[in-house]
Amino acid sequence: MSDGGAAALKIKAQVLAGDVIAIGPGKARLLEEIERSGSIAAAGRSLGISYRRTRDMIDILNSAWGAPLIETAKGGASGGGSRLTAHGQAVLAAYRRLDVALQDAAAAHADDLIGLMAGAER
Image 1 (cartoon, rainbow, N blue to C red):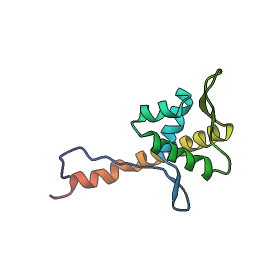
Image 2: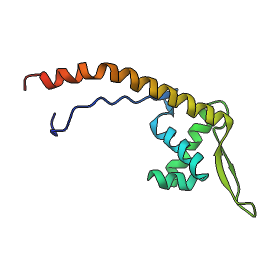
Image 3: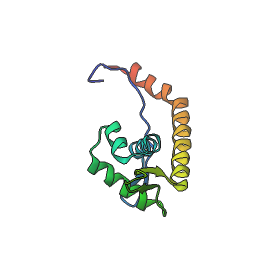
Image 4: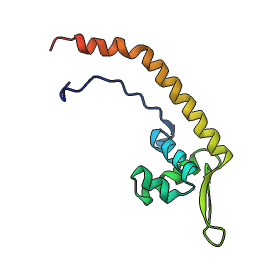
């Protein structure tokens, strides 16, 4: 390895809708942060992404799944905020189940593959 770091396997689940990533690790984290904070802006800040990028991600999430995943309420006397719809909660839960299954499957085979790297002549 060029940086001298430990070898590791990285598995990333992405669901595509045409050429667009309908959900992947970043969008899943965004959904979790919106659910936790109740705010699109706060979720973006927490993840270190711009409000514009956050909105772009939400637009994709809300259009790729046949029904919105996030709903927003305008500010005012009762305050505003955002939350996941029931469909959004279902999509996030299904994605997390998929991710766990992929990580478990990869872990069962990663040592064999990484061992070949460590044992290779340099």
